Image (tube, rainbow, N blue to C red):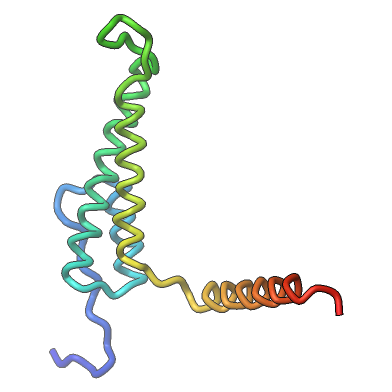
Length: 128
């Protein structure tokens, strides 16, 4: 089969063993973006983190939010802290991919920046 110039390669399938939400994240990103192999590895790590977050979320649904600490004091369930850390890691991994927004979002952002710049210049110059 001949590959046409400018034709896109099919999006890579989600890695084996991903859960439903992680596989959906994978598909959404690889269908919208063309990623290098190193970026695919980062995306896979983010998707595996999503799976881990889902498992911890399910476990936390039936677990108490407050448990006894080492000195018998009430403390937050350690899963709460772990969830927060893993969610932050997913955000960092996805941010490291520097995914492109669609063109309209980029134009809107530039327009907002221009408007903010003009307002700042106006404030610094003061009344005419």
